[in-house]
Image (cartoon, rainbow, N blue to C red; front, side, top):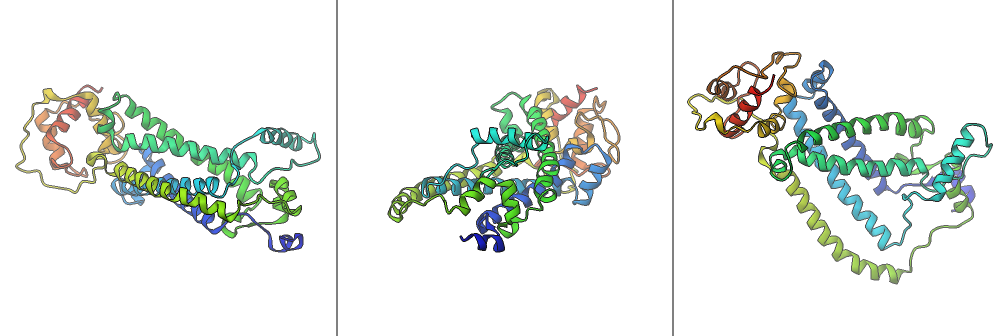
Length: 366
């Protein structure tokens, strides 16, 4: 690329496939935030209003999980693309921090404090972009692992202690808040306010943007130094090895994703209002386990309306049912029939054993 051409046309930074991935990440992250944050703060009026605006708690949870599935699928695709670039094309690991990044951080601090008049010449991905990328990778791993535990609490509790479920919920919510704040305060400022960087939509950066954010890469481009591709015969040989591997891994990972979303049928209870008249309770409450009851309380979405411990929330469910004095039979009948605005829960959604677990847990709360 000639120097005059880059000045007029901009410097090519992202290919269409990379920009498409970014759009998918924008879409999934935004919708996950809009549907997830209100669930974390469901006891607040603003969160309840958002949930109502988005169609109710059931719709919010369905959309949240659809977007989570799409994000996992994008992560699988991204991993495949990276593997191809590294193994077949022999490209550098430009997102891995190195010694130069540590020097750039120090030079950046000196520049902003006025101790140096020269802005650091940074590579294709500067230290801030690397930190954001690695934070997203780490954050996605945390959200997927904790999301799986919350999505499948009964199966998780069969393997791990029950205390891991509320711990996963706390970690999932905290990471979500951290990610949203990071995007708003760091990413939005550095990309859209400070530089008005539109490269993820246009694919190009101006000369001024390149000089400030990626001066080292700009120097290489203008000097005609680019990272060479392997010879065509080497690429073809690597492709023959890579393609079978990619097919096998894709099948395994897609099968894993399907397993992820279908692991536990009781994970999401989108319950219609059903008539429970005539249904009888076939268990004795003594079989109830308060640990399982606490897990079911979250898994079935009871906490969204009744509070995390049954203490009640402002609005329609502003009354405490913790330490309830209802008999087991009266409690079960109430759940089966769905009083007032509460949906009815038939045996398809909550078994008699589940009701016993919930009742025992509630009667031990104060």
